[in-house]
Length: 111
Image (cartoon, rainbow, N blue to C red; front, side, top):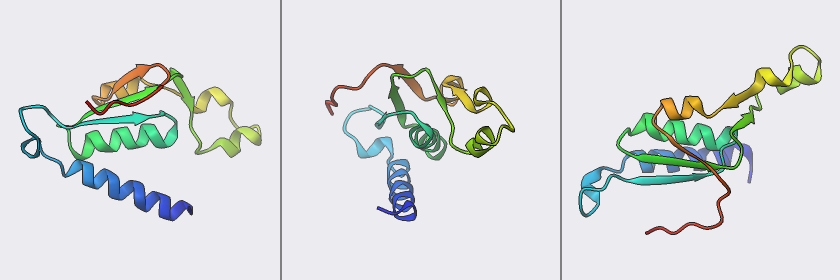
């Protein structure tokens, strides 16, 4: 799948999830989304879901407490910056209301 097709797919999925309202579900439970993997794409998806619809309970599961972003990595290769300058913690996600679980994901049970 090409990069643009993948981005269009992810964008459509985020918009669909953001359009969910709590009235579409039985009971008073807010919609919940689990993001498996918190690299650059997973963290971005989790943040955008919270921004598009703050009622969605977003949980991100990743075994790494920090990750290295992709943008500007060519500057590391060229010696213009160090790898630590591209390393990000999960604190920003948590400030945005994303629940971070520091663990490996073995399976998903929708219930």
